[in-house]
Image (cartoon, rainbow, N blue to C red; front, side, top):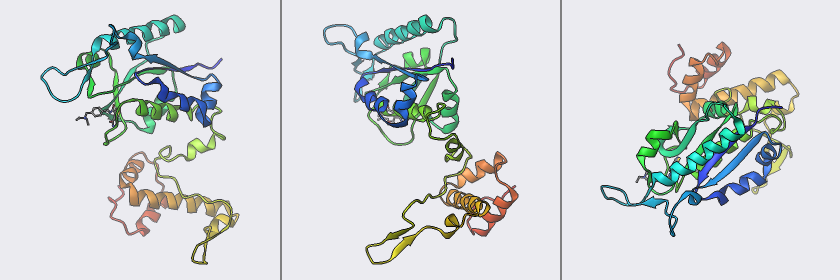
Length: 267
Ligand code: 9D3
């Protein structure tokens, strides 16, 4: 029996997760049982008639802060449930989604997809009491430099990226290998039928001739060059990283020199 990958999500908005469980490749990952998602409603761990989970910030200022005590109780419940089901397995990391976190990338997605899972804490309001973070959080993750209304969408992004890496979830295993970032370069353009696509002005847009040629070697080289060119133009930082990782051949370097771009010189 393959190990189960399990994510426990602490959230105020569990409804946001349902669509992800119901459609597409992600549904297959959950239906197959290889990926488990358990939602914990923070509200269930709040006290009093109002079930408060937030309060005003000490020191003043705008917005509200998520209080530590309900979070402490929710996390204790998650840890207890996991211990009951997994015995003496080491505890999984607690990941907090926060705009001040490290930016999620495919290397971390691959690491998490390899198991055994994590506890995902979705914040709302201005943030959560720092004492809870200092006590319990192993990793803070951001999606990048833009402002969202909470951590649920970032958690869904992580779950989606992990789900599609589960065995049997993608149509064919080769599509992992061709993913942007799996080889450190941006993906090449894709074309499908019809071969001739009529334009409003009476003209027609065609498919690059090489793709219809049947020459697998020439097709592979064309795709590699389109990837290299797109990456060099849009994400020169990725060219630098691919070089440092030894992923660019002498032929790749020769092609890059023909582009007349201001890339840093190859070592
Ligand atoms: C005024 C300071 N704001 C920070 C930019 C406060 C604030 C805004 C929005 C604090 C938290 C949030 C909610 N955002 C997240 O929970 C979040 C997030 C994001 O907003 N952008 C990118 N990644 C992430 S991960 C979690």
